[in-house]
Image 1 (cartoon, rainbow, N blue to C red):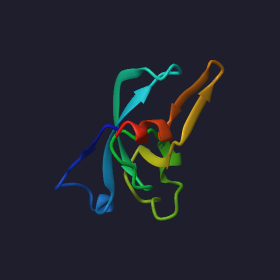
Image 2: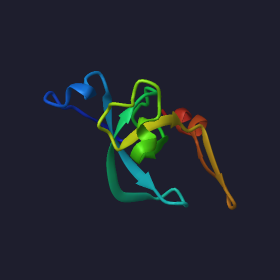
Image 3: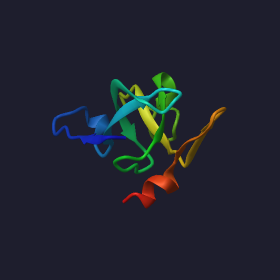
Image 4: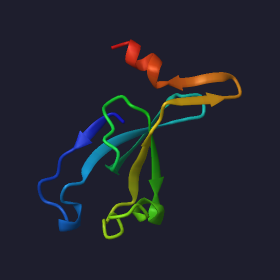
Length: 97
């Protein structure tokens, strides 16, 4: 997650929903030039890697059924491991700050 989005005028169904600007990564952990705005149900912070769900799955969480969102943050990632090894560790990132 790389930032927040503020919208004072929006659908009433989005009242109280934190909106995040999420940048996608590839399988090697490289940042892609692709961004999405996603609602946040878990309280993610800047520079955290998050799990997003899209489409109708974004509205499956209890209380989100009537929200007009197509992407929702549903988890904060602790680690990502691929065949070549550890791609991301939240613990390692926290040590850098």
